[in-house]
Amino acid sequence: MQITRKQEIISVAAQLIKEKGYNAVSMRDIAIAMDMKAASLYNHIKGKQEILATLIVNVAEEFTNGMKFILSEDASALKKIEKIIEIHIDITVNYSENIAALNNDWMHLEGDALKKVVQMRDDYENNFRSIIKKGITEGDIQPKHPEVILFSILSTLRTLYLWSEKRGKMDVNILKKDMVSVLIKGIV
Amino acid sequence: MQITRKQEIISVAAQLIKEKGYNAVSMRDIAIAMDMKAASLYNHIKGKQEILATLIVNVAEEFTNGMKFILSEDASALKKIEKIIEIHIDITVNYSENIAALNNDWMHLEGDALKKVVQMRDDYENNFRSIIKKGITEGDIQPKHPEVILFSILSTLRTLYLWSEKRGKMDVNILKKDMVSVLIKGIV
DNA sequence: GTCTATACCTAGATAGAC
DNA sequence: GTCTATCTAGGTATAGAC
Image (cartoon, rainbow over all chains, first blue to last red; front, side):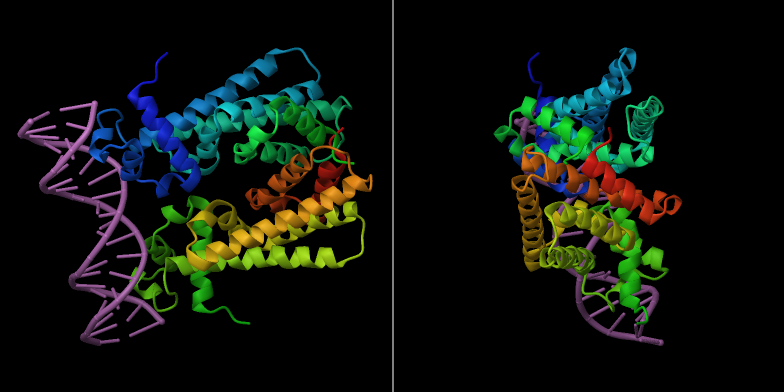
């Protein structure tokens, strides 16, 4: 698997989009970072939208596949939540720029890509919510409002990408262990 | 305190910026939402930057004042963290659009406003970090990596604004109670 | 205080030479 | 595959009439 010029462009663009947001990055900015002219980009990609759609759909599918795997396993609700946390950390390590785009620029997607991503996101949240509710009825999880639990865990996991710089300083497995502990058992 | 036309413009712009982001909202968009022409906006504001700076600096100062109050109080680290959670919820209820701008568009600030906001943010995080560390040395808080604790709580609190629509369905005090419980004691 | 008109710039994208 | 040149649309902002 060698890197194509197209992948290179998308990768360079991803960095810029993570830092400034989709609308603040121009095709000329991307071209400068690639050391070429903006017009030349169009020999490799159809347009700016294709970059955004590729970044977001790719990582959204990672999460969807991860959730599919978790649902297929026979485990307690609590174990499944732990697994969700670990999957988020793993995906964040490999796709931090894509996650930034997914979090911050999904609303700038157009057409079918927008519909698809919104649908995947809804499905993901619904599956997560069901696992939490199951954990509550089974007595493994505190009977707090499920939305509060869902939201507090998910908001932490979704913004993990902001840590991608600091990540080098901390081993991924230690991060997983501490993060699982803090999110599940709290801090006291 | 009657609402000036300037405040009205900033308020209308804040809604749009929350939904689409600063760079995706044009002066023409704001003018249409105000039912006037773009040129007329300039009789009330200096430019688009002023809108962003007002939104972000105002809410950043709320957090700074909240933290100042907490630091002045004589309470345990754990009580102070509870208070921080409550303050975030209170500010989110009143400034959800401003928080969206602070979270997503702070990097589009220019000049002194940018410097000021970044400084306030750093100070806030440092104060929060110190409280967590104090709680750990005093034995009130689990000896997990302080950055993990800081990050997991703060990321949840910072994205609370995404709940502003659902908020109506849930009483603020119940939300506070559950959120404090989930973030402090965990979910098990 | 709002309007029309417009200046000036930068955006995404295409055409066609090399 | 990359370039120069260019098109068209839309951006922020100003000038000046009313």
